[in-house]
Amino acid sequence: MTRILIVEDEPDIASVLQDYLHHAGYETEHVADGQTALERMLAAPPDLTLLDVMLPRLDGLQVLKQARAYTLHPIIMLTARIEEIDRLVGLEAGADDYVCKPFSPREVVARVRAVLRRTAIESAEGRGAAGTTERGRALLLDDVHWRASLHGIPLNLTRREFGLLQALARHPGRIFSRARLLELAYDDTADVTERAVDSHIKNLRRKLSVAAPEHDWIRSVYGIGFAFEAPSS
Picture (cartoon, one colour):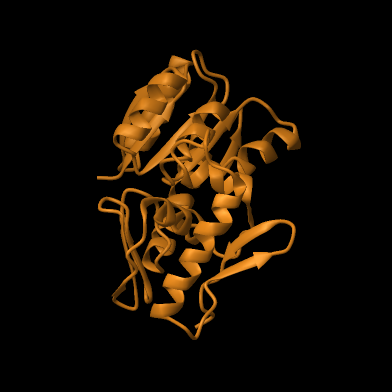
């Protein structure tokens, strides 16, 4: 059964969300603070997280940013903040959707269904969420064993190369800055520079080209960063 983690410090709201999601056929777990939520998300990523922004111990945006360094499972932000800049900050940090309070529980269930459906389609095309094996027509990523193959040919990636490829492939066509890739793909950025990203991207390109020389899988965007380019057919 699809498991939804609800991170909400208002018991009444959490209870209503649980009732509606159970009725829709989802299994739910509720936690009320950011630190506990982050621990749950990293220990056993759910199929989707509903994450409130205003939380005790660790706010939702901090949870989102830290979680995105390790897991790409879908995350929908719940917030009373209605300013466009607040929504953009969350989406830029890696949220899959944003629902503003007060909201209809039916709307939240509809957003959950839409995000899970989109994620399932991406997974079928080789761009699924972390915690799964990503099966596509060409690229396969297994983030349990940190293995990758292209057209059935093992790529023999390092863990950091795998993390970079996974972060890029999760959002084909999206341009990631070097700083953002450092956050997504490196466990500890204290001793890592943006130049290391260039080096690992170079190695990734070389390994991908061995398996599929006819296609340039990673595009450089001058002065900005890199994007994953899936074949058009």
